Amino acid sequence: MSANDRPSGQPTKTAPTAATLATHDSAFMKACRREPVPHTPVWFMRQAGRSLPEYRKLREGTAMLESCMRPDLVTEITLQPVRRHGVDAAIYFSDIVVPLKAIGVDLDIKPGVGPVVAHPIRTRADLAQLRDLTPEDVHYVTEAMGMLTAELGSTPLIGFAGAPFTLASYLVEGGPSRNHENTKAMMYGDPELWGELLDRLAEITGAFLKVQIEAGASAVQLFDSWVGALAPADYRRSAMPASAKVFDMIAGYGVPRIHFGVGTGELLGLMGEAGADVVGVDWRVPLDEAARRVGPGKALQGNLDPAVLFAPTRAVETKTDEVLDAAKGLEGHIFNLGHGVLPNMDPDSLTRLVEYVHTRTAH
Image 1 (cartoon, rainbow, N blue to C red):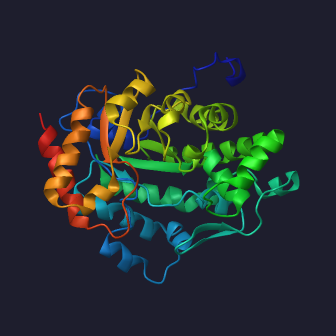
Image 2 (image 1 turned 90 degrees about the vertical axis):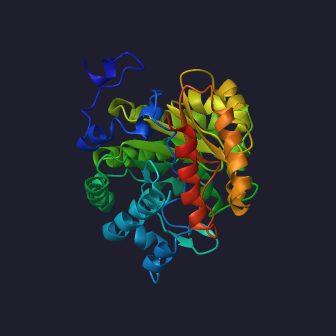
């Protein structure tokens, strides 16, 4: 039976990598599969870098995109929070615009601003910037992941990519945007061009995640950072098909697929429908309510408000208890922040939080 003849929803199964076999029985992977765990696993978005002084020292004089393309730096930065905090999974150090840079899009990450695109995509001719991504384009990812999985052993490595909607928003706006006016103008005003843009980005993103999985990622997370700007009907029509295509492209690998967005309380059910095995929840919706919105058959990840970490330890523990209590009835739960680690966060507060969750949930 050829790939074209396969019944829908039955992707070809790919043999697991040595890394996924080594991490199979970890608490993180068990939680992703909604199996019993020895303790609630913990990791933090943006744990690689950001708040760690050892990260800032290592990055001195090296631009963000350059550091993402140096396997030695990527490996060390990814490992730093695992060593320091004792988290249950590592998140690969990179940026969501790396695959765009790799295929030749003229962009840079400006300190204090974020990704800035030299020639925003506004017309069909502008789509020529987006060629297919090949493994050779991101050879440094394959190299760094090989180095990391050798070091991490039974600790899972999470790969990631930006979702098509969020990448499209950066490309259309030319950088970060508060109102996404150019993005929505294209989405509503030229839905055909918008559809082509997202479909190309889905192909690029799926190819990028395949590289990471084949290099040893035990799980992957699709970040849709800006999709909370959409109403549910617009998400279903104009963003969800591209995310679903990405998830479908990697379904055959059998690795857990995590989907996360910010301000997506109204979209949680749809984000699960797109093909995620684990739905990330920001801090705005309690986990028990999030479970009701997502429905059965999915694990949840989240969802302590990152700003809580600036409060005294007792207050952090009280708010953590609220998250864990709301998660009691879940099929699977991975403890995380409701978004990422903030740059000026005290690293010791993160270490204490990991220890507290592990102790509080140990069986």
